[in-house]
Length: 126
Image 1 (cartoon, rainbow, N blue to C red):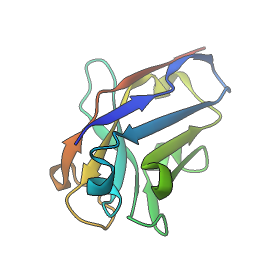
Image 2: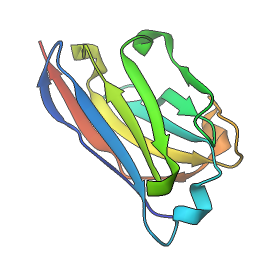
Image 3: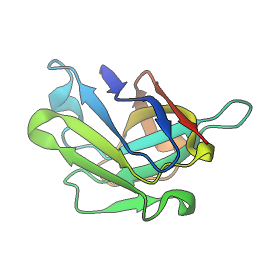
Image 4: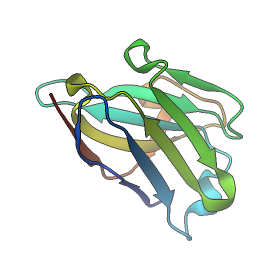
């Protein structure tokens, strides 16, 4: 399964970015019924889950530090998952990546994810 994250860049504090995680045409069917997650890893820190969504988008969850600012969503017809990031802060600076879970439910456990995409760098300047 090939996943590719995109949409990162440099933005000033308070700004917005929209990340996309697309599955290749060959792998799209393999993830349409999977829970998906967005993760981030800042320099010198461990990877952490930012947000997760279940297979049909009906359930979502976020870490406390991004609640009210980030929104995860998915378009199953496009095999794509999005992360809308608003009111960005310098502490949001990290490499963001997406992953597909083994099951259809959302999960906050890294061990639940089996397919990982390459990350995209988000830099928030103060």
